Image (cartoon, rainbow, N blue to C red):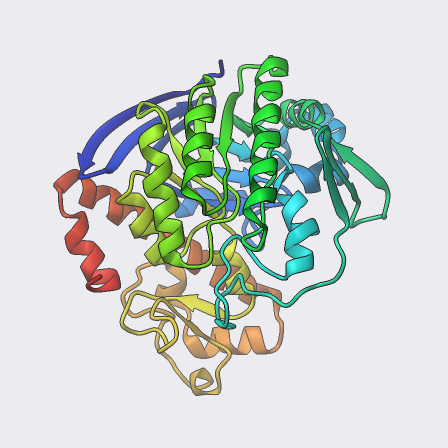
Length: 399
């Protein structure tokens, strides 16, 4: 298989630290990877990311296959040269767009759906009809750029990711909706299993290939999928698809899945990166996360902070564009030691965001990514010293 080695270096209960070694470097786990959707972490340069101590990025196959195309990136020398980023890169398979452009669009939901909780970041209103259709051979959709017809199969997904040249690539899967029936989820899971086997058969490069566990929020389906995907010889494993209708559902999914995955290979929880979710998932044995929230929320004016400074609704962030920060000369987070907090005031960044000055997006994104990098460092150190439960209480309180 691919050039991936994984070593567990310490444990605290089921939580663990590890060394994930791939072609372009070594990643200390557990770690949250920023999302470089279109070969960029929005508003941040590769120099910014290196200064922040970012270890690994994830890029989006769906977007890059359409613009500038995998052939263009391959001709230039692959994603690492294209982005001027020479540390590890993961690419997804394009399968998430089967959900986000399909049932997710129709249902107006994210990977987790909280009925009645309009404040949750992933809860959305229905956005219209699906522009993605799925059959047993692949996913058909219209390009969001030019409305051209596209058809993504396991073979095509792998070939595109091989051209992109990431260190770790994902098998094509179908990400299901939390509002899908058990019957549909079971059918989708079997399709994902067939695609996983096909991806293994056609993958020929030294890139590590990651299999994805599906099954929604049903225990029998999740266990069946974990056992099957875990038996196929992938270099690592990801947990994808719907994570249910509550945080408890997500925790159950992890409790069901992780015991059936090989302990000597990395585990990635796809699309999750909220502070409390990271703690709950790490203590269940997750090694990798990815999430767009630090930069996406930053561009909307949300600043990450250590508790207890945040708002009543969310103790880990506040909105800098609120009127009360117009004359505030304090740093974004009084506990933070990033260069933004050491050099700029809330008042200044409030001004930048209110006037839509581009510098504001860079400053707030830098701070938010720094916040997550430091959080993951703190979690790794706590696992090594056997104090994970103590710092969890400091961050999120008693369960």
